[in-house]
Image (cartoon, rainbow, N blue to C red; front, side, top):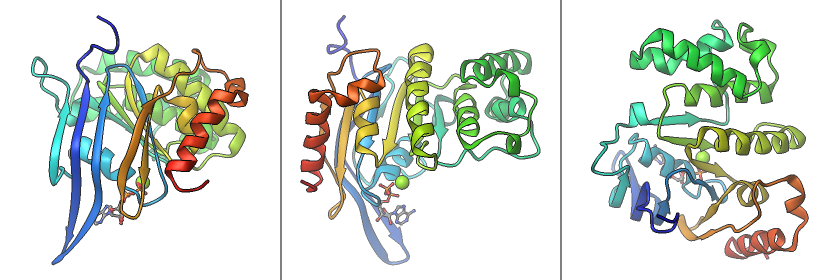
Length: 258
Ligand code: ADP
Ligand code: MG
C-alpha cells in the first residue's frame, strides 16, 4: 500500500473550539481540517493566538472540540490519550530534584509500566537523544538544548503512538534551534513516530514537515495545508533552494505578510 492510500492516523474535519469563560464565549479556532498519516511529521504554523495549542489540547482530550470530527487511531486499536500521547512543551519542565534518567522515566512510573523494561528503554532513549553521559546528572547541570533533548526522551518513554510538540524549540537560541531541528529529524526517523509539531517559525515548519498546516488569526482558522516535497534526508542547505523559498513565500502570502 502506498503512503497516500493509507487511512489517516489522525483525522480532523471541520473542527471548531469555543471556550466558555463565565457567561462569555471565545471562538478559539475554526475550520480545522487535517489528515495526518501514520509516521508522518506534520508542522502547524501560525501567529500567536491563532489556535495552535488549542488543536493540541483537543487531540490530547484536555479540551474536547465543540464541533467537528476528531479521529485518532482506528477501530482496531482504541486510543487512550494518557498512554498513547507524548507531549513536548516550550519549557522542558524537568523536576530539578530528579536525575535526567529519573525524569525520563516519569511517564512510565505514572502509567505503572514494568519498571525494569522502562528503565532500559529510558537508558536507550537518553542515548538516542545524545545525553548518554548525563543520565545521572540533574537538570540544572544541562543547557537549555540538552534539557529539551531530555524532555523529548521523556515524551517517548511510554512508547506513545502520537507525539505532540508545542513550540519545543521556541526558547532556544537560533543556532541551537537549527541543531535541534536536525536532531529532531534524526529522532523522528529512528523512532518512526507520528509527530505534530507546532511552531510560529515559518522556515522551521517547512524544514521539518512532510506536510505543513497554516493557521491564520482574526478569525483564528486553518487556512491551508499542503505536502512539502523536499529531498530526504533533509539537510540545512535545503533552505537555500528555490523550492524551499517558494514554500515559505506561499506561507507568508497565506498569512498576509507579503
Ligand atoms: P496559539 O497556541 O496559536 O498561540 P492558543 O491555542 O493558545 O493559540 O489560543 C487561541 C485562542 O483561544 C486565543 O484567543 C486564546 O486566548 C484562547 N484560549 C486558549 N485557551 C483558552 C482557555 N482555556 N480559555 C479561554 N480561552 C482560551
Ligand atoms: Mg500556543
